Length: 90
Ligand SMILES: [Zn+2]
Ligand SMILES: [Zn+2]
Figure 1: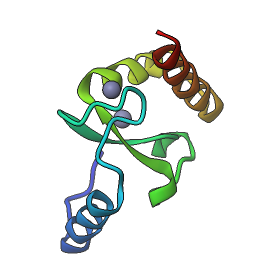
Figure 2 (figure 1 turned 90 degrees about the horizontal axis):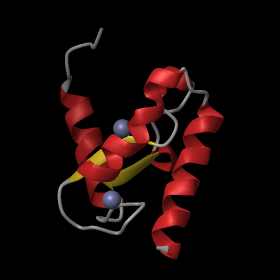
Figure 3 (figure 1 turned 30 degrees about the vertical axis):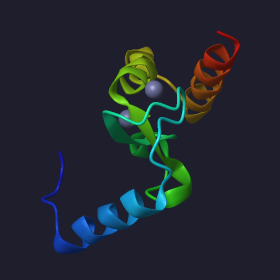
């Protein structure tokens, strides 16, 4: 269950948006961007700038496909790396 968003949450999110590179971490697209935690919070990820990236909605959906496989934090990072690599080679 999610707690209600506080004023400081909004400030924090705006801070993130201003300090993150505004392109998809995987494919470099600059449209349809969404914030994503590299290591999800429910997977012992932290809510810090280092753990947050922009993904376009397409790559975002892709990376969350492993959610129903009971993934670990490592799985997420591995998946991110693979997606990035594929993009570069393709
Ligand atoms: Zn993308
Ligand atoms: Zn996400």
